[in-house]
Amino acid sequence: MRVTVIGAGIMGLSTAWALDRRGHSVTVIDRYPVPNTLGSSVDQHRLIRYPYGAMAGYAAMVGPAYRAWDRLWADLGETHYVETGTLAVGTARHQWLIDSVETLSRSGIGFEELTVDELARHFPLVNPEGLDRAIWLPTGGVLLADRIVEGLARHLTAKGVPVLAETPAQEIDPERARVTLEDGRTIEADRLVVAAGPWVTRLVPGLAGRVTPSRQVVCYVKPPADKAADWARMPMVLDIDPRWGIYVIPPVAGTGMKIGDHVFSLTGDPDRDREAAVGEEAKILEACRSRLTGFAVFGIDRLKTCFYTVQPDEKFVVEPLGAAAWVMTGFSGHGFKFGPLMGEAMAEVLDGLRDPASLTRWAAGETA
Ligand SMILES: Cc1cc2nc3c(=O)[nH]c(=O)nc-3n(C[C@H](O)[C@H](O)[C@H](O)COP(=O)(O)OP(=O)(O)OC[C@H]3O[C@@H](n4cnc5c(N)ncnc54)[C@H](O)[C@@H]3O)c2cc1C
Image (cartoon, rainbow, N blue to C red):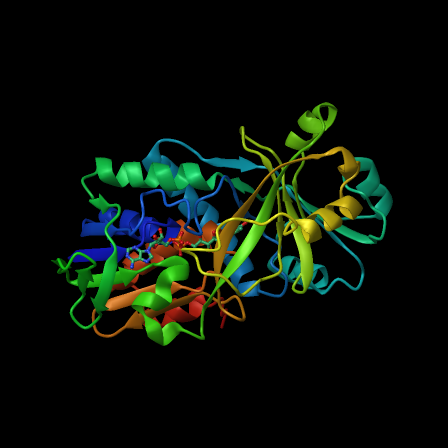
């Protein structure tokens, strides 16, 4: 079967990888250079972790996602993952934490409740003031995202899969799996997969209103020299709630230390609005000052913007489009960890080995 994949982010490349493994003839196109530094998938890190609030369907997918990553590492011949463990902190009223504890307990995933004293003793780099609940998991870690996207594109190219950079699709015909490029050429195939990240509504206007590009600012910081090694040994720190919160990524494997804000902006254009203005980091820094010990002497390295493609309930949208196409979108702020798993599931459906409707439900995190 000939398949065209639009988008060389983690979703498009993973789908191409899984289809190529199944012996299909795949072509990937992207409107930007690959890796696309403006895409959602390209930055130093993305996290994978089991605590998932009340979203039990996604929590259940994390174990299978790890196994899919292992299959990818075997094919790439290298592993772009650093296990750090997961530390989630909050208060007794912190709903995301309450829900995570319930979901983890029900699913039998190992975690440990820490008292505030234990938190202070084991993780002195986290300021326990104002906290009364914490959980620790030895699992979870950092996926080295830019190295993964680059490695996947290189692997596919070496296997003879065309990954055509700077090849923008202008229009699609989902009934015939036909793509018209901006330069007027067409690409014909048997199936088409649209994995166009925050640009998706330009090719699939019917999704406007269901998914929204959301400009997010992340802040790379520099711990003081005498604490850098301690931070490199820290777990990821999650202090998140749907309405507020930050996540802290330790400086592993030569990457920077990064802090992100969990709140969706739901604004911005992924082709513009890419420079972070001075002051946009203020909320993140304020949260860091209260959560991270000695943050006053940290340096600010740089700010970066990145776009989520937000579905209001953060449920992925993986659906058929017409007779011969699928769209993969709505990955919100948590899709990267599931890239290879989603790609494999998409390939199984295209191969007729998996029920299409069940893929849509599963990708939306529905457990029943
Ligand atoms: C700041 C930030 C932090 C995040 N943290 C995490 C995390 O910790 N854990 C996690 O699991 N997830 C995380 N995510 C979410 C995750 O990164 C995304 O869900 C995922 O990368 C989406 O991948 P994608 O392939 O759908 O999109 P993209 O990576 O954006 O890829 C889409 C590609 O399609 C191409 N394209 C678009 N239109 C066209 C066209 N017309 N023709 C040709 N090509 C086209 C684009 O150029 C682009 O390269 C985070 C996201 C951000 C922004």
